[in-house]
Length: 327
Ligand code: UDP
Ligand code: MG
Image 1 (cartoon, protein in one colour):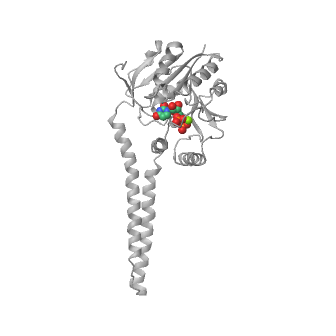
Image 2 (tube, helix red, strand yellow; image 1 turned 180 degrees about the horizontal axis):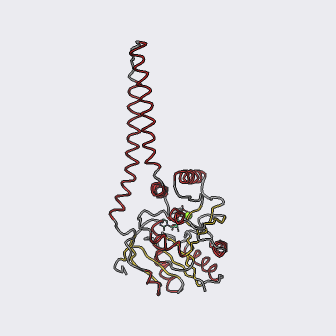
Image 3 (tube, protein in one colour; image 1 turned 90 degrees about the vertical axis):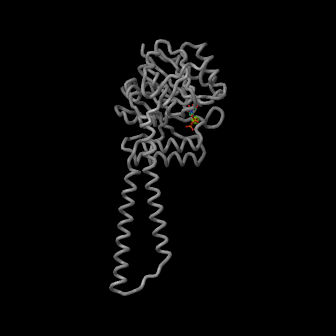
């Protein structure tokens, strides 16, 4: 029988976990698969950790990876993928915005031969501003990225084992999983679905975290911002040259005197702005290079539960460490 792993990142979701677990396990139990759920407790500070421990005790098919602190959604996902070793791996959010009932549709496409089946949000349930920001993010990312990253496809997806192994072998610490998934290539298929509202509570991804994730995506998948600095440099130099010609013409040929404090100030401020922006862009890349060269583990696991023989996949990797058991 083929095996299926469902990876779910969890950060302070104790109001949702019982419902999520019941619905997810009901869907998986109806499949012709040997299945397992891998919850990643991303350093929750509510009762999620304890709830997950109980679930793992009661259900042998529930595995848990507890991270030693909050590492952020993308790394929590990466931690889950690192322990997944089934033939197909489904990735979904833990707030029931990605309905588990869609999983059979993803499986059908995989069985038809796709390596990656990503779920496309037909309609976002977020407010107007957040929706606009998301569409702007995807437009920019798709314009700038050298990889074809599909719009409106978030974490919710099914990946073939070969894809998960490739992603696991990528050594970078700044991990935008939807981008890495697209990078792998192969046969990638989209399936539309109706995105539900968050079952309870506020998004755990605060606007600040979302912006950080967007910047990670931009800078990890595009060098265009760097080239933008060069482009602006050329444009400004071109303008400066034209201005110089006019000044020379006026001085030498038409003999008009040039008075102008405002024009000088404007040029200085304009140039200063462009220079600061360019330095800032370079800084974004250098910061990321610095982060990669420090080569710290991208996440630290404090405890595994119910991994069974899959502890074997807990291979030493430069990407993660296992801390001495905390309890
Ligand atoms: N999440 C996580 N670590 C974090 C933030 C979020 O594991 O630091 C989880 C969260 O518990 C949820 C999923 O990631 O299961 C999606 O988070 P959220 O609903 O806040 O994101 P959004 O819907 O805004 O993308
Ligand atoms: Mg959500």
